[in-house]
Image 1 (cartoon, helix red, strand yellow):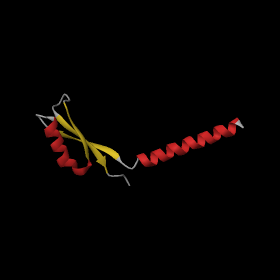
Image 2 (cartoon, rainbow, N blue to C red):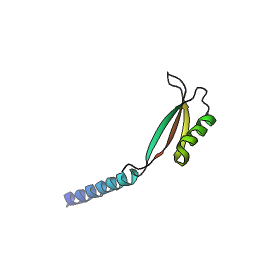
Image 3 (cartoon, rainbow, N blue to C red):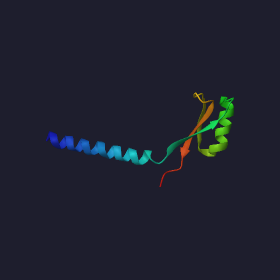
Image 4 (cartoon, one colour):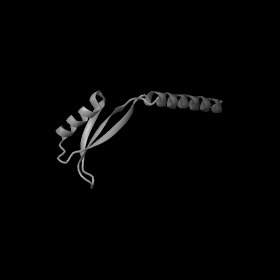
Length: 80
């Protein structure tokens, strides 16, 4: 009896995981970097909105060893 209950729980968990994966794969986040020597949050946000249009989600300035960059995050179209 206990084995049957465990089997039912496993089936429910597997179904939930598969459902979550199907729903979660609908949108994927993309990123792009723009070289920007004097990066400010306002300049970065405006540049990202120009590049990503309605798919824009967020922007931030990053300072790697090579120089200043504006990092843009947004939604990508689904992969077919």
